Image: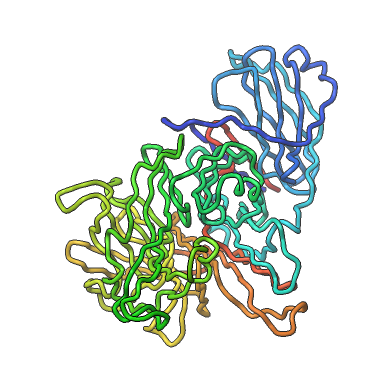
Length: 556
């Protein structure tokens, strides 16, 4: 038997959104020992989620409540921590699938006395929907060495060649240390960036043009959309009939984060015209003007979508000053055609895939995949230059001195600055020219922009090496590192195709920071149909619950 408990304290300055669950509800006559206390009570299972339930209780007098959901191998206790009230909507999250839970409720008055302690209807969960979730292979080799918590990640789905398409191709999942799915959510569009905010809500992107805010109980709390897809079309595409806030930017792709002042920062794309002296990738004449896609950092007000700041990477650095050969930077990016149908396939110059605030919010650190570098843009005017200008660029061929034994990163993802000032990132390894074959890794550096010196202080490579040519993540935990080798392309014997094909495989590993040992691993792969199941990012979270609940769980 083991127990997991936590108190989720109220966080100053945060607005906690009320919980709403659209589910299938049943109720019975009010129990005699509760009728004097409550006006109504109901137990429900969410119609869109097999392992999410709710107790809805209206008491006659202000009170607090504690709900017990008990099964043979799982005991869940959820208590409200706020002020006494008459309306109680208690979420039951992280339930086991295909399981019967006995549900009881304790009602406590304002003096602290328990005035009711009664049993309600049983809650019967359903089996997990196998057609909506990726197949998981779990290896819990050393659970005692794991950093405690749950693991949140989003899967990238690709239809099998000549196989049946899956309409639920956007997946968000949470698994526990045993690899059990304890929460999931499906979208009809591809889910990209994903972060759990301090209030428990999930902020994520869909199909590179939409950002959505979702409560852990499945309520869409906000949606923002660039003009690459209009609101009316996007609402139909994503199955949302609520208010959509249109943004005066092309897209919201690869990253959306909350800033300290409550605004949102994201990345958008723009078309710029460039005349390359030698032509573009042997596809145009020297000096001919060509469409080039660049990126910009955008800060907007989530209340009304008003753009507060927009910093173009093309203003920070001229594409013609890019030291990398034009031919290597995706000269003809066909995957951008749906977003830019007005002309020939554009060159994807920067392909930014992350933006985070550093220097107490004075700088935006942008991961620019196609230049193999990190750009530090001023977020504010200072003596060194105006907001949006380049403070420094960290990467090979940028004048930095790498300490002996260190290796540069290539086509990287997901940089994060640690408390000691070092930087951890996922090195995809595309076009790596310092090895016989490409490989991917997590790598950590100490660096000094003043002296332009950098030292590799840690790395982790799988044994044997893996190569994830796209997406990926690395998060420093408490003595371990969570690494997402999310975009591995592997051969697959597809029964529906004449020849073998490739499919995406996602591999999530937690490694001991000191020894490099893999202590936990989850893999998504479907070798039967050759459907692709990659992963974009992952993070370890303390709980599924918002901060107004105390939760204790016991497993046996």
